[in-house]
Image (cartoon, rainbow, N blue to C red; front, top):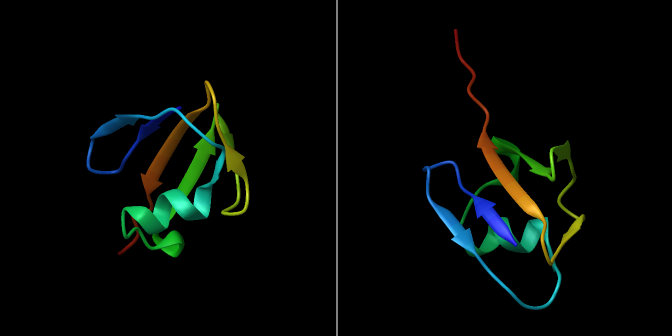
Length: 64
């Protein structure tokens, strides 16, 4: 699995399937501040990622 984080870092992992929520928790990322895509499609926190999945975590920009 290849994970792209909001700070422009990338991590490649192998192993057991994990939830998107678990990935966010491990990096101390607030789920209400980001959107997450798996293989180009938006997914919720309870979605599971594994294998060749490509995960992108995108920080939501807001303001006036």
